[in-house]
Image (cartoon, rainbow, N blue to C red):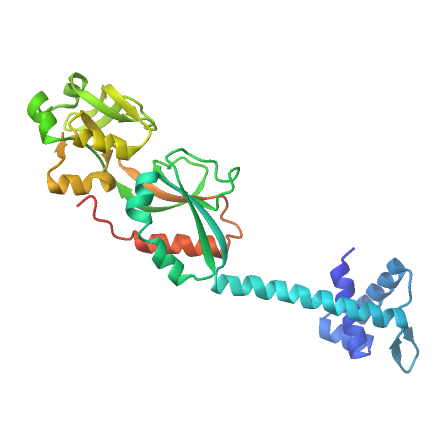
Length: 299
């Protein structure tokens, strides 16, 4: 039973005063219109129209029902207009999760521009290096820095970042400079707790893939703390270039083993579903794609 179809036929007949005219307006047969209205009356248990060979008129019940049906149709049209307008002018609360350091260094400066461009959108930003479940925890989008080639998540790649091994000049003066990844096992390492390889650091070098198990004196679940410890001379760390490029440029950190590259990481926007993507999410995806079209941390 299609109640909306019944209402559509009833309104057309009532307003045009003819089953024939209603059928022409709806693009269906007169018999289909007549049958639909009869089924509607049977379902309601009330006659809505008085029919004679010369004219058609609404009963008292039909007049009341027509008024309410027109209100329903108007509400549906308003709902359609609201969503169509939202596609052009996104609105509502947009909840985003992002890694802490990337969020502070590279996302925070963008938020004022986004808010100015889309005044109808409000942002709720959560910074955490923990991998959240975006569906269970109610996020519209998350930023992930990882290798997602086999991920089942719906995602859009925004940029890439290299991984570099580095240490402070002070640490290297005291402990020497490693020239091969295997020598890292003799040094003090500062490791990121959420690294998928834990203390196994992978490299690609002139002789092919190289794997070394480092001796970590510190495990930290925050990249900023790893970098701060390295700047203080506590050991060697391996961090994304988006995080350490300013320290490399200033000389406060020295890149090591540059002939041995670590696997590159992608920076992704991930979201629950590609189907019926809310305008606010699509707006943010397009905005971030534009913002990270060119990055300079690997220069």
